[in-house]
Image 1: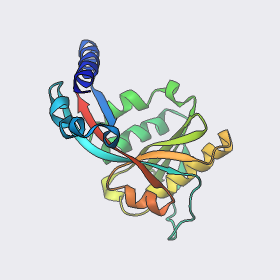
Image 2: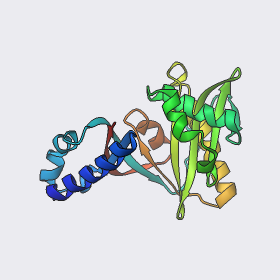
Image 3: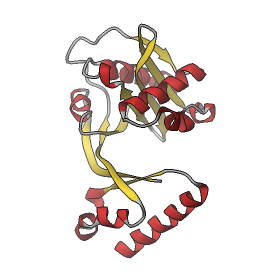
Length: 205
């Protein structure tokens, strides 16, 4: 109920405030009782959370073949500090967030022990990236982004397909899940993904 939601958000907000950290709250809105869903933004705002974006949960048992020729791209696996920073820099640019903030979380070797990633380069510049991490018997697609000047060219599909091919080699997993932004959902649908749940994303500082 709403009181339980407030209690949980208050506890989380207190912990992150003590640590001086930004945080993200993500919830499957369509699984909430209607009265709580209708008041979600107001309740979240009480704890310093601002709405960031809606996202759609999606799943694919296997990828469909490309519906158009894919562009050539210099794809490199994420294996060292330069490629890890490439993931952070491209995500920062793609989602209009500070690159240093993204790299503080992403360019940490420890988080890549059970994750595969690919960075796509054009003339030596990192322009697109995608990663996947194992969650049980599925691969969760994450950190998909393209620099704004290079969006709409098919680069994200190239790096995502390569990351999932690498994940399949490493873990033998073909079923994949992801969270799609409104802008990315049409491309994922073409790749064979079907919607599951609707999520709302909030950020706090």
